Length: 188
Image (cartoon, rainbow, N blue to C red):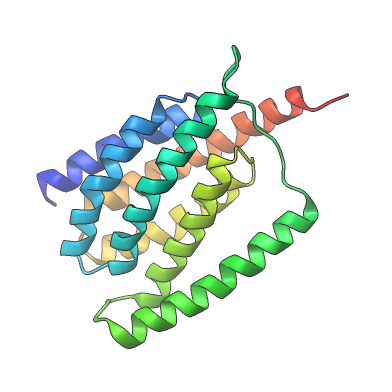
């Protein structure tokens, strides 16, 4: 466990706590965290997670701008996806996982291309839905956390594994808070 990993872990925890509170100020912490984690995951040969950090950087810039435009006195408004959108995002995520993981398995020395690929593709979908302020993003983050904890522990990234246990709790809290907020903001 490097000091760099501990720094990244701390930044992520601050970021997710602020996201659960629907604070737009989560984004500076997110940008710093993904930058540091890109290096950590490269060193651990978790290339899908490394590449994911670049995507997160770009999507966090988008999310920051979108949240700034949507901000209200009570925080950033959130809502639910339609059933059709859930189905579409589910199918696209599964296809992306299969294609990405196949490529990582075939063309890299990744140590866990299928599990790492699942984390990456679920995270991309979750982050996109989070930027769009959809409650369902939290269900995906919970799934990511459940998959990531044992993978990172297996790779000796113990601080990151502990962070993902904490993120699991924060994701559950985020889901509860966002469900309440969506219910209050729904038209009667």
